Image (cartoon, rainbow, N blue to C red; front, side, top):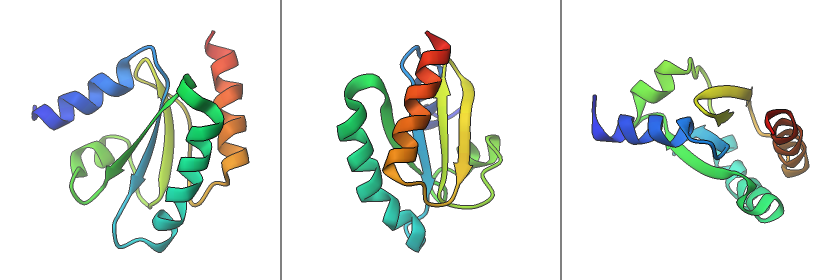
Length: 106
């Protein structure tokens, strides 16, 4: 197992919720997600960690979670998928998804 993969697994397996944006540099909709993710991060603060995973550089991680299209967003906590959606997701919807799932877990 590569160090990079182990680090990814460690990140998504912790108590802290992690929103993963599986993206590709050549993907137009993925580029649209960047400001949305920044806005989401401002709104949710430290409730969730947001990370970006380039599917071309991290094919194993993308394959492990059956990421077929980009962008694909997956919310993890303790290694479990709480929510996932492909395509551009507006910031207000991401904030709602994060808040709803945090309430379920607590």
